[in-house]
Image (cartoon, rainbow, N blue to C red; front, side):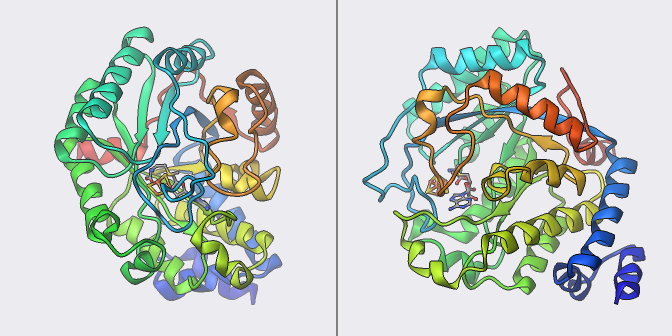
Length: 362
Ligand code: SAM
Ligand code: SF4
């Protein structure tokens, strides 16, 4: 059957049927897929892996996504917000260690004070790093005005996963109300593009009730929406969430892991010059998960710079890795791992999505 896979991999455009077939590749066949993705990556984005220092700014969240460990309804979560000084300290560490960028990620919140606080933080990070650090935000759905204010303060990339592109499934994983509306999330992706951000999205892989057809549609969604960056990884259950009740219906974690690797590889073949992150959830299943992602197409890694004392509390899912490491340990171990995966680190570079630059020029 390897000839069938070879034939699919030669195609200019992959159909839904082709993608589904690639997602079903067995151990021998998937090697061909991974080799092809590695070649495409080398040709279109090169060997460089770019760092985005991740600050998990706060686990306070107004929403109740049914899968997430820091959902508002989880009363067991111990809530925190990193102080302004600590954020700036983490950003300084990133800058001094020549990470090109930082990412501020948190639960979803709104309110004037909050919007202003983020705006100030973005400006301060820019000022402290003399404009050198790139800033990515991942702070959920916001109004156009808020997106614009943060953009004008200096953030230039935004990550907002669609989570699942099938609206029916989206509604199964979220409460049925206005704050968890598929169309609103989609609209946010349009607003981000309109304001001028490099737009990132992504999905969770191996959710209960999700089929390989759904996953193929997710990849086609990213292509159709001409996304600049993608972060996707396995869904991992969390005991204190409503979705935990379906844990018996999940495929084994290692299968979720390989399915996620295939998703990364197929996406690299479909969208050759975008940025793709090697996500932490990959590492939660396989200690070498991020390195394996890099080998098959990912080119972005997000070392965790959240001050250690908060890390245990940003527990989106079980077995989240690196919750007990400080930034220095994290950096050293990552460097060695990236070299092992055949990558080079793009120190001091923003590592913007080539796809975005190309679209802007055309
Ligand atoms: N609150 C913002 C939002 O939802 O866009 C950003 C932070 S949120 C914690 C970041 C991502 O974590 C979500 O987009 C979701 O895909 C992921 N996530 C949440 N729970 C997860 C789980 N149980 N397994 C894997 N990923 C999960
Ligand atoms: Fe909040 Fe984001 Fe978790 Fe949803 S995924 S509960 S918005 S932190």
